[in-house]
Image (cartoon, rainbow, N blue to C red; front, side, top):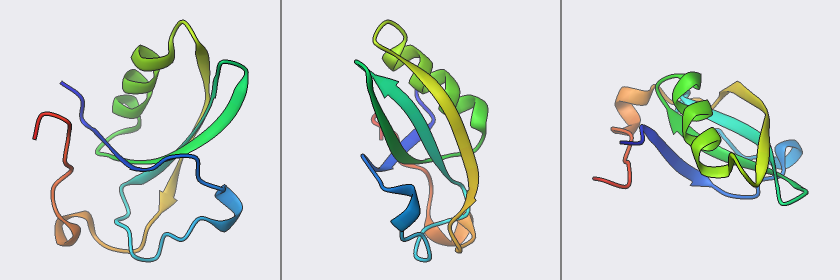
Amino acid sequence: MTKVQLVEENVDPNNFEDKNLPTDVHLVTFTLDGNTQVDAVRAYAMVDVFDDYYDRINDKGTVLKIESGFGKIKPRLYGKIKTEED
């Protein structure tokens, strides 16, 4: 069961608009088939993000970094993290 919600794929970290997002948003930088990509995701813990991306891209890419500190809204005011199972 994944505990990660994809907010936006292929974001530009320099122009990422996060003021309307919760503070549990993380930016994941990873390589996939030789291309570097950044996704914005919600998760309760970075380890959940790492586990999810490691399992998803293990044989095709590498997780380079996971950054937190984005978003301006308290997560409980924004709503629960929605997973694929929800």
